[in-house]
Image 1 (tube, rainbow, N blue to C red):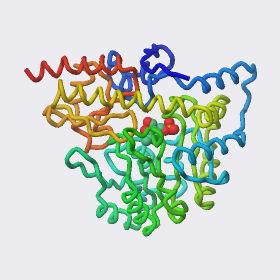
Image 2: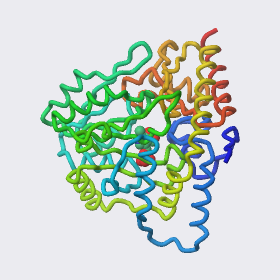
Image 3: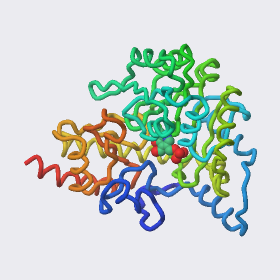
Image 4: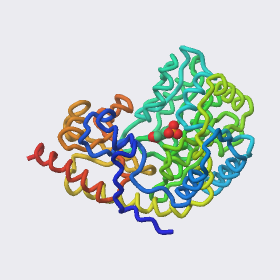
Length: 393
Ligand SMILES: Cc1ncc(COP(=O)(O)O)c(C=O)c1O
């Protein structure tokens, strides 16, 4: 089936966090929402049909996770990422973020250190600090417009006796890197050597741009697999984050049992009745949606890059290798933090994510979500341009 990603769908008054809560979350109710990581595209039709079909059955009692959930996960991970996983490794959770909090509770003590790589997805830090654990920040290196890993620093941090976990973002939100095999192997070796369990968040791994190839860190070697918890979900790929369903792959039975026991102690939230039918359908019937989505997103990225180069050269796109979350280097604008946020959110009325929300390293950056019709992207960019021209007369 052919999808029309140019279609502008009105999301206002649909309980959308992105559209209806932009005032609270971004700070200006009039800003065009280009922040949280969902898209303004319709979901795949087979997913819509599966949800409708379930909705039409008039009883919404307690659901259970049917075994087809595991088959669908195995099929997708093998097909898209070349990693053959076993059914017993897979755990259903109602989202990826709960895994971070629960892993912190299950495998660390208050005061222990958990390694992250800022600027990175902010709930990593919340999961650590909300549980009284300590962020050990292996800051990424930013040089010549590209991010890389400071392995010496990682080695030092992992060797701390208090370091127990590493939260890896692969591909990385917000900097858009797809980690290469040698980078993944080096990280995996360092963590293995120092008994640091890797929690690899691969939620964006289907969203590969311009020929990039995602490599599951755990798929590189059995010894890495035994030290890794890998988080997958169809939520970003197929725009179903509101349904709450993810598949967590944990080959090591001790780690798996530890995580499951902690979820049980917390009486973790059970899935809603629509989550599993949507998950199975997305992973089993919707590859054609993904290929069309990727080519549309690549078009948006090119449009953005051309627009900035032509009209606003002081805002530079950090070359994205994955995701629809664009990381814009605004250092040349000459302001950062609150003033940079004010420029985008209050003056330009574009609801970006503040770069410093991902760590102080992001103070002169913003994150722009281009998972929207090109007309919406152009509208946002035109609004920014008007302010840019006022500031750069
Ligand atoms: C890297 C990353 N992990 C996890 C999530 C959210 O996960 P979930 O909605 O499954 O809890 C996001 C959403 O933006 C994300 O970017």
